[in-house]
Image (cartoon, rainbow, N blue to C red; front, side, top):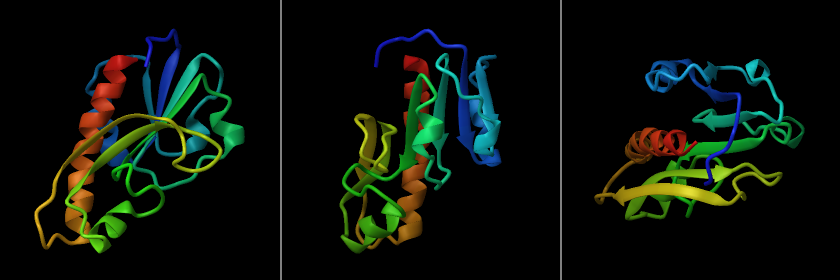
Length: 145
């Protein structure tokens, strides 16, 4: 992803993740736990992280760039990928960062992180692994911007 000129990065996430994102120390990062708090315009960036909500096209298309970063490998797009990975006995799991598109989880993948998963993991174990990689993936994407 090329470096872009922007005013603010609105990170729509759960309040428990605010401190981690704010630790980057950028005055341009604004965390919000309600999508209505993000101010869409073509000079702002929207990053959704771990929210489990579908952001309508009429909202995310008004940003310069809209990224979704979530637990789950690209092999399991959609809702609750940790359950599908467990069901399929996936040998790896992680997090994916992709550009938002009209069709959920169909946007260009700009990065992903995965790790090997040991046998006999439950969905909660996969989800914990995914959340670890969400932070790594988010950090990489923020540093690229």
